[in-house]
Image 1 (cartoon, rainbow, N blue to C red):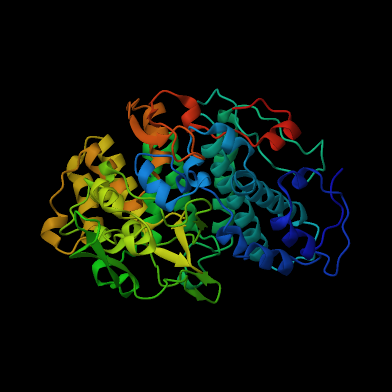
Image 2: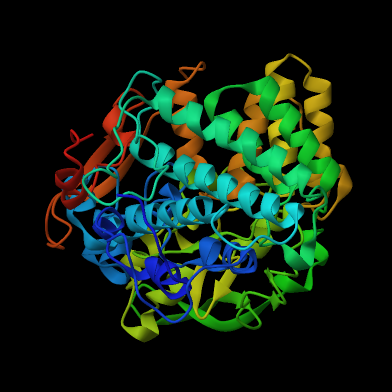
Length: 520
């Protein structure tokens, strides 16, 4: 049965309900503010909660790639079982953990439902101008496609004929509202169709210019930036390049990181290096962090107002590890640690040694000696209320990297080098060092790892290993055989390039039963 009546309070409340509730909504709701005007829909679509809800989980929030590593002895001093189990190898944990259900599934599907409520009401409310109607329609269509893409990357194989996630395009109550799963190809076709329709609507509404102080409102540049990421994932390189170029024509700001006051670090304390007798040797290393918490910058309708590279200010907060995910050896070795400001500003902090320092009853001499250099540092760029924030929204830096990758794939390494150099000049302390790169495909992929520092690596591994490249990227991690037993055996976990289950989330069991879908 279609919904006849809905309220603003009820729609906003959808952000807080349980994941299965979106399928069990009753057709009628009571409340104080019935939706009856286009202005109400307009303000609802400008709600920042669509993007900055801290429950969002993108794959890189966990130990899912070769960019992060928690060694067993480091884990014993700094971690907990939930951190260590949050890996693609722990499918039972991922399938049944309530945080995973709420963060990776609930928020995405609740938003889909809300966008469909808006679309359902477009012609049922008191109208204002045609431009406002088209803006609301364009924003709702875009967001429906964007959040389906999140679900696609998390819960589907990289195979057009594999099971998809259907498409949530109605406000029907259960069981009629449960979408048929169909194939990945079907879900992709619906995502692209919604993006096309959203683009036409935004153009009709005059929403063709990016506005920093209204960066929660979707514009044509932000839509093109999102489209570029989606087309790259699908291996549609010509379309990805076209979209990235269009996005940069609308908004192309890059921060010179080494000169940016947001990233000024200071020495918080000195940490003793222990001598052979286990006492302080007199030698110290510095724990460095931001002078102040880099809390998100709000301004009017904007979020992260001072971070101009964002097209859409979407972020997540790490639910399991907080700020205690050390970088991997392979990522550490990719940085020019003398000239790359990303290393100097976002890593190079000795955070892990501080976290388990001797003064706090942490690492003893043997453990200090065992700790490799790359295990001392964690990624720290944005903080919000004391939590590490990882940016999910597309950025101008990502567009330069997409253009570079597509150019390299077309054999135009000179053009790829040009795009890389433009980006790197905003990331390096010296232009000469920034220009020391070729334009090969591997150069671009390495630069993506340096730039996104674990945020998009799982997305890249999935498309590279299972897409046209068949790249065969494998890696291994040392782990405790039983995360709840510090004395259990240390094992090597192998992450192969052809194990599809390592790149596909298990569907939360409660949701799988409700939907009557086969488990991934």
